[in-house]
Length: 379
Image (cartoon, rainbow, N blue to C red):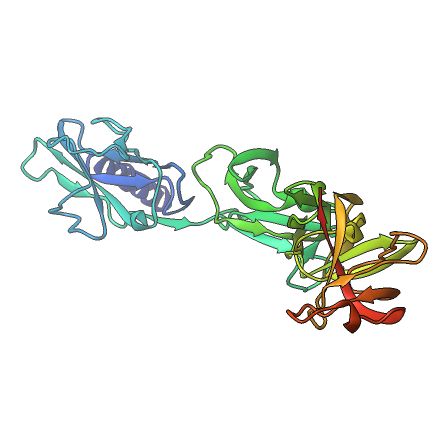
């Protein structure tokens, strides 16, 4: 009998205490700790309680950087000082939920809800509050090897990571962007058998919040020369005596390191220069022929297509080795074959010193003349 009386006493006490709690002030936060990605929106869900005979006059939200009892507050229903990023989505009854749009790192910290009723003692702050953590989306690049460079043919995986995910209850959905354009959805971006077209700036975002952009990961795919070609200025068909420039162009990453110019002569390929541009000063018929260039970097080389240089005009000759002017005659006609302007040629000729005392008596017949000769032409 005593035991039954004792149990009844405890039951009545619990009911009494429950009634007290229902009549007192209280704030319940749905989550004590909240994690959000920079740029996303986050809601702090909460409920509040007060004696039923009282009426709520004002609701406020505070941040730990300020006094949680006296403010200033980031939201005050009486002042209506809400900013565009902070929205009170509750009411003055029992819902005290609060939403922050486009969260920034400066928004991190503890948030507390405070309400004031029409009672003299009806001022209450829910302490401890709800603590907000702000993180950035990050990207992890996985390569076949630890080498710094990526080249054509390599396969690379890029994973978007939200450190707020716990791997069980929460798993984010992602969308990928290349140079600002959306390309694919999913946590991992697979770049298989890469080409130069895969080079660019990559970012990832939460699918539900496209403003939650990660940092930029620049993918730089290296490759050997491509689209190698030759251009001729002013033209591939010119009159003798004009200047001509052959220009080699090519796309490569890293840029072309070596250029080599070749001339196809008498079924042979002869190297004639190693610069981006090959210049001819006062072209002659000896410069007629087919030319091409080769561009090379550490990943390979590529030849251009062949261009044909055609020089037109009538020839006269001038020696440069010792500044003799030579009237060159071949016994059997005015025909000369010049492989290129740097070849040493032997002719049987008549020559005369270019002096004021020049006379026929100073000339020597059938002398073997070996000179570096270029041809000048006039129409």
